[in-house]
View (cartoon, chains in turn red, blue):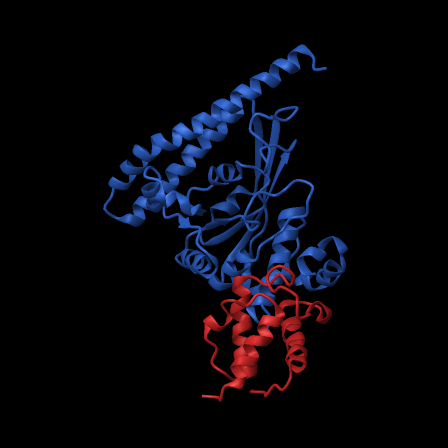
Length: 89
Length: 281
């Protein structure tokens, strides 16, 4: 199930649903400046589940190094934008 | 003002505690150049050697517990010991004192432990810890893979899910690694609750600050539960691990026995408890 994302707001809305469901969070906790590890209590093992889900919703292959420096929700949005701006393949 | 007898007893326990700390350090060196190599050389089979060494560790730690008891430093009691001796279980315990691992291993003829990485660089200890089949405290996924492999081979494995000693008076901060290990290995989890009264040898408390009286350690072994009973259909492991981690916390923190079936009901109450907000936020 691939989706096309237009704006950062749309990506954030989608992330709110995905992260809340995956990691038992409340939607209002998922703000751009929230740190995944310290604010949202996502650990390195959880990050694997996050990759798999992002792969599913973007329909793109995700290289782990694209997420190496990801710390905040905003960084995730950046990474998704970079991924989806490239042609699929 | 302490009365004469109590003061004498206090000084005695400081000296005795200092003595057992030195004994522990020297003992570790002595057995790494005697017991460990001898047991390793007693057979060509590495797995047989591992089991003999683990039995040896139980004997040494048992002797250490008894030394402390005879010297009047502590008393201890274990409840449900037979459940510790079933193989292939993930044993999860809270971690109030420095000697929890000594007490646990003294009761278990065979158990794999996770050991500080630095020991593999220590010239005296690197071979003993590998012969004993102990696991290196690696990062994240690598450690979980090694631990679940050990369980799948039918070994029991001891984990302190908090990752460090409990800070007295603060809520327990469980990490989710233990839950991920149990889920990955599809293992039985055995919760163990350790208490120490009065509190001593906790994090940040130096050895010479002995408690006002001889301390007592109680170790209560709970009932085993299958990790898979915490999994729901079509659910990411991240969620099952959170559910299982909450169960481990209630079991080791309060010792309240609850089966996973009751968990669904208690879960909503638990989630609403403000004292637990740090875990779910």
